Image: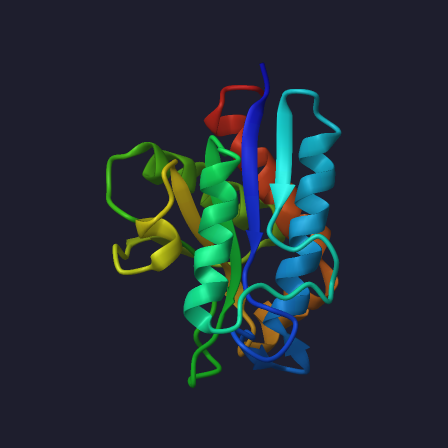
Length: 188
């Protein structure tokens, strides 16, 4: 029996629910690429089944922020996935702010324990700063999914050092996430 992972590449390519921009990069391009790499890694491992929210770069979901988020959650819930991972890049008006963090609905849950592994392995793989796991029950994709869900903020697109990693090591971010899943499931 395989473990069903739904990978949500945060944001649309343009228009409604487009992502952050910084240092010549667009969040939606990075999340798409990292999601594709992660899906390839998981699919090459017979223990996983994978579905993506965006299967091609121009794919856009919904006609508003709300309907875009709802579409992503609905795809995961109706499959139904065993685990949900939403991939994002962070942004801040202060370009010095940097690092990786994971968001979950509440502490001491399967989501929280999964986030611990994902965070540790991303930081180990790409060398970003560990900003910890944060609880945010207001995030739609964490609140409305019917399975353990983690929202990953890979790095700050507005920080020059993080942006360089996001531009040049998208596979490394995916590999960190993949290794985090393996450790969480005890498959290493």
